Image 1: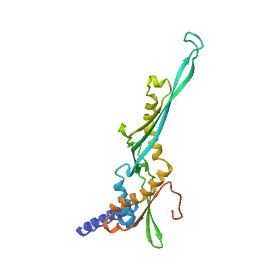
Image 2 (image 1 turned 45 degrees about the vertical axis):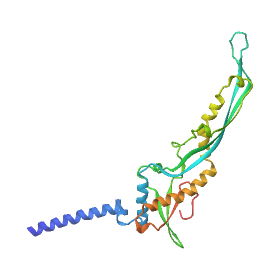
Image 3 (image 1 turned 90 degrees about the vertical axis):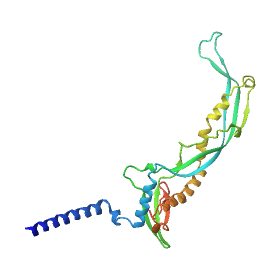
Image 4 (image 1 turned 90 degrees about the horizontal axis):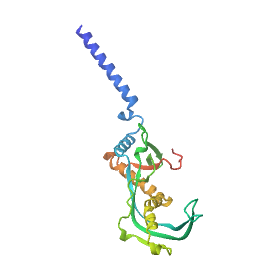
Length: 238
């Protein structure tokens, strides 16, 4: 009787153990090195650490911009002596304000929060004649609009104001204020320019690869990592 009981316990333990192993193989193949190689698993884990923050800062850039705005000086003319009917605006002159604004700063990020819930970055191994390459596909860098630093020192601004004859008397700063208000938008436009984004995209590939490498266990740190952006042209090894 005791022997039968002991055999039943062992059988139950074996069945439970088998069920756990099957569950791990099906749902967590990375735990036993299946589905991906060990280096790929290490890279995926490193990316998991980086994804603890919603965005990955990859570069900062100083931007100088020139903005201008103009403001007309207008006279309102009514068709009758008394102010009734639809008035007509007559432009008597125009004041323009041009500002050169150096020292604005922008930040570029890789938006790691762009992945959907449960979606993982694409990490794959590519065979090459000179060895193995591990390719990581991430969302492309973009300007972080929440961190745009506009020059706040008025002594560093170069200003040229061309006032019309009436504004020489009234000294209205409306054109200057409009130019000042347009600085942030001009900085964002300059930061997103094609040449600026090309430089940031290329430099950020190496920056992100080194961030990943820094989080790898020592035995994997010498692996060759290449960062590709999700909007890069499709290559033959994809």
